[in-house]
Image 1 (cartoon, rainbow, N blue to C red):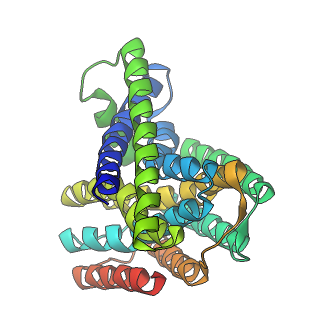
Image 2 (cartoon, rainbow, N blue to C red):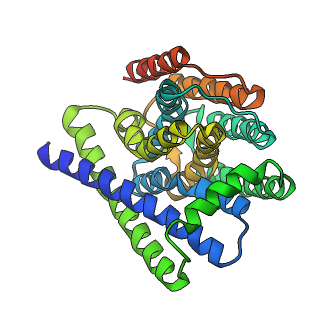
Image 3 (cartoon, rainbow, N blue to C red):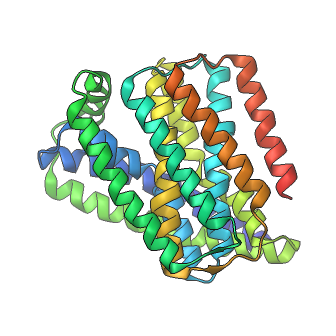
Amino acid sequence: MIGASALVVGGLFLLSAGADRFVLAAARLSRVWGMSPILIGALVVGMGTSAPEFLVSVVAAAGGGLDLAVGNIIGSNVANLSLVLGATAMVAPIAGQIRTLQREGLLMMVAVGLFAGLAWNGSLTETEGIILLVGMVVAAGVLIRWARQDSGDAGTMSAGIDDLTHDLGRPNARLELIVGVVALTATLGGAELLVRGARIVAEELGLSEGFVGLSLVALGTSLPELATALAAARRREHDLVIGNLVGSNLFNSLAVAGGAAVLGGGALASGFSTSLVFMLGMAAFAGILAATGNRLVRWEGFALLAVYAAFIITSF
């Protein structure tokens, strides 16, 4: 058990540190290659924050741990919109009102609904994985189109990306490429360690891999989103908080689930119906919040933390 715990802790460390540096290197490299700030924000950074979920789920599914992969996806989606959003609201009230977030929230709800619908029957096949990946390609195209249209709403986000890519001076393409490869390798290694440790924990404690994915693994892969959201909340960057979480769930539901299904699709041993209902409910809540701009105050943040606790208890 001590060895498994060491694998989990070591995996989480490599996963978090590697993913953070990979996102920064990718964003700065994209800037060197002439990509606009808003496209970097919509694609490179937005999708890069889900790198831990993607690598963990793909590694797990490829090794025969589809339940662990699907549990991680569902658990991460719920954690993002209950634990992370709730903890952030307790730091500062949140409201998101720009048009980009309103549409992105709707797109996220469609993506989560598609994933839930395909997984509802207790399986996630290779064909369904292809459907999800095609959905991700379509969603990426839509995001790019919106990003090019919304030059006004993009101002704040562009400024944030400018800070991200210029804080450390003028990027060096060769150096950033090397750093990106090293960081991605570290992230992949961390994912492998985390999956190995999590499967050992599940076996030794007599827990299903699905539950371990929903709880331990999902919580670990959501830590980067939590750190980013708390930092943004302290700076009162509310749109960045909601946009990051909505974008993460969109990518998780399409690209992560699709990749996992293509590499290791099949029947699911764990029953995820209750967890899928929680995920759909949280997606609807976040979509409405993004669309209406209603403020999320501290007591509501506490209520979201209670929802996350209820999710873990009912999933046990």
